[in-house]
Image (cartoon, rainbow, N blue to C red):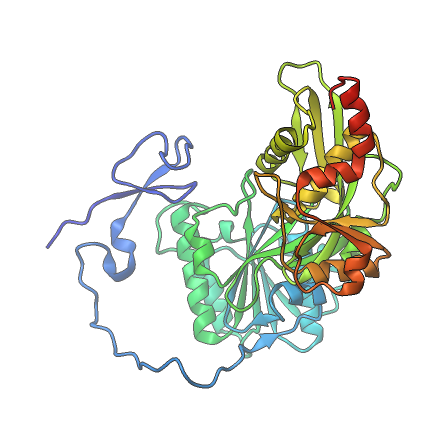
Length: 470
């Protein structure tokens, strides 16, 4: 019989090492590598034979009837949108977010909404006492609902409690997965081994009973869910609850969903009575817009199937430093450097001696490259000191050659802009599915020099004649 080899696992990233080391080669963290018993794996670990030979599984063909996954509607439309139309029975969801962002508030409101509709909901808190959870429920006007509450962290005790319930629960919320521990693992709670074993036990319970499981996870300073990456692969959906501390709104974003679309968002507003749904987030992001200020461009973006209009603000100021500052909030800093390089190389817009500050209004985060044109327009507007038309939106992807490439869902972007009172748009030439009426009121541009000429063509020519730097 082969001898089982000892494994050393990083408690920060989950990388397996053949021997102990002070620093993890994968994530660079110190003193995070811990020895793990290899006999606790599936099948008894390396070198051990499984207890049974297994059973034959019935095989079928690709053709056949397709049944929709049974879902539980929470009644919170923004949450149901993000999950793809409701929480699927027997699924496991992982909800991550910064401390104090409102994860427990959101889940308590969802639990109370489901309880009011007659569903059986169990809320297990591993971080707070029962009295603290009750105080939150009273603040959210959810204390009168039939949500069953417990404060426990041991997985065996939680599973025993769930099995003793007369009615199988429809939803079980565990807050949080980092506090759970199981007797089958000898490591401390919160380690990679414990998190993985606890999550696996709860997911097995969900699949065998049909109850939906929601796991709450903490995030690291990089914004990733703490613990092993395998945790995100084990669950059926991963949701991130985002927001800035100085802003009153929150965004629930899905990054993985086996039963629905990804990159969908739900928008909430944090109030004294809990989270309030925001059905039209574009109005929220544009609510305090200064239309006469240079350096502000409205970007018509897409989040999943939802069009969203958001203001991009840029400030370009002369710098006395040898290396000018480049500060970005809400966008990719590498993408900003690329836009600046294209403006200098193909448009003659000199930003090498200027500090550049870019901000997405409201703390919103943009991930799609269609914001390139809006960012370029904001930079040129700030440098030239000319305000952009207040009734115009911008979208399009900029290539390294200076060409502007079409992006998807142009018609939906224009429709959302028209609904909010915008009368024109600057978009890539050759955009698909755009009506003739929208083309007549929009400016279709093929390259970035055309955009610069439209914004500050006369001023650019004057400064070039004066040999001034633009």
